[in-house]
Every structure is written in structure tokens, then in C-alpha cells.
Image (cartoon, rainbow over all chains, first blue to last red; front, side, top):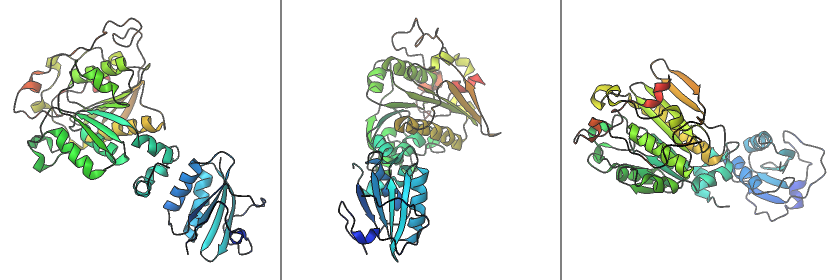
Length: 105
Length: 284
């Protein structure tokens, strides 16, 4: 299911109770400066489009990435990390919905 | 964001690259590269730059496609024989990538037009088959403070260097064209077609590195390879303060055109990459 997210994601996507991602930090919930809906995208375009978003942001800003498949949920955080950004959390909020929160380097 | 969805997909493998990204891709789309010679080297250079999304590609070549070109000049096809090379290359580029606009210059680069022409571009790739043009491109780029890749191939070998303003120029390494009798004719020399691809892709890579700002350019170095042994080597060179064109007291202050080797101006020969010795390999 593709959802159009505004500047702030719905509370539900920040729910960590169903977390099944590969890593999760103890960082407090961060308000996203930007949110990108990539639920219908697959690799490598999930990372390509995440990177394009990050390029338009300022250092220290928070990007929330919504992903719709497990391959992307494992690849995007790794690729974002290799680019030097900080992956704050990876949360699985629904069976086919992951939320990756990144602080731009 | 200047990139549209089609462009994000088309250039996704560039965008993925660390140091390139969408920012680098936009730089390429806004770049202007001049390719001197649409032959063995100019073919892969123009095709890779077009595929990479270099927005404007100028091509200088006065020649028409000859059957003997097709063994290596992959921007042209059998049905292009007799057509202008700039037309033929422009057509293939348009098919490859509509983002790339070709500016056709269907004439010889000369002392009269070289400086104005190079001044219109961000980077110049020289891939002709003759020394006079290599010196002309070098001098024009020095005068106009433009970066360039100069390359040459012959038989199984290729050599290239990248010149940047303030760094070693072609004339710092090679003072003037070699004596004519030292240069094999087109009929004598020959070249393995794929060697043109090997060197042309090195030159295209240098252009893309310069335009995106990634990596270290092949400046103050001459790269040469021998495809027979597949040995590659890099020789360090440095700017010569006594260089007649870029030195402290230059003696060459205007563009000069050296006489073409005899076979270059013989009609019906099919001007081709095979003709001349590439002086860049003279440093070995």
C-alpha cells in the first residue's frame, strides 16, 4: 500500500512495537525534517531516491524513509551508512512497511 | 530537483556512486565537452559521454565515413559510409541519449578557429590522428585556460595525458611534432580496433572525472599501455618553466599550424586513426 506522507509521518509509522529491522538505536524519536515515501520502489531505486533526498538536505537534518520490502530495508541503511550518514533507527511498522530514520552527515 | 523520474532511472548507476550522486549527474547534464576528431578515439569518447548525460557535446571533424574506418570507429555504421562523421555520430548520440545535444563542427580545427571553439567548452578531448592538431589543441587550451585530454593510439599501443591550466602541458613534454619521416603512414601502421576503445574510454573517464570533480586527474603524468603485453605504465612529467607555450617566457604566443603529413591530405585515402604515429608514446 502506498501512502502519501506529508511533512510529518503519521504516528503509526513511528510505532516500534512490531520492530523487525536489522538495527535500532536508542535515540529518542526525532521529528523528521523530510519524509520520503518509497513503499512502491525496489532496489536500487530506494537508495537512489533516498540519496537524492539527502543531497537536498542540510547537515544534521533528519530524513525518514518509508520502504515496502525487506531487501530495501536491509540495503538502504547499509548504503546510507557507507555514504557517511547516521542511521538512527530501522523500524518495521507493518508486515510490508519499514521506516528508516537517518541524520544527514 | 532538476532530475526527472526518467533521468533518475537512466542515471541511477551514476547517482549511486559516492562522490557523484544527483549533484554530479546534474553537473554532467549542464556540461559542455568538445571532442576533436570523431574517429577511433572520438567514437567511444562521444558515445560514453552521451550515455553519461553530458548535456552538450561539440564534435569537430571535417571527414566523411570511410569503409576502412568501421573496424574501430564505432560511432559510425555501414550505412553511414560517405556521410559526414559529425552527422553520423550525432545521429547515434541522439539515439543513445536525447539528453545530449550535439553541436556539429564539420570542419578542420585550425589556427583561426581553435581558440574561439575551445573557449565555448568546459573540457576538450583531443583524439585525432595527427600531431599538428594535438599541438593546436594544446596551445589553444593553454591560451584559453581550458582542461583537455590528449590521446594517441597506434598498432597495439596507446598513450594519453590530461592537461590542466598551470600544470604540465603537451608541449612541456613534446616540444614540437616529430620529423615527418619518423611517422609511419596510415597504410603502414595499422591499429587494433579495440585499442581505440581502451584509450578512448580512458579519455572519456578523465572528462567525466573533471566534470564531476571526483578522483585525481591524469595531469603531470603520461599514461601508456601496450595491449600485446597488457602492461600499463605511468610516467611522471612536470611543467617546464622553459616551455615555449606555457613557460615563464613563452615564445609561442599565437596559434601555429604545422604542416600535415603527406598522407593526411591525399584525397581518397579515408582519413583515419591508423595514419600517424602517436607522439605520446614517444616518452617510453
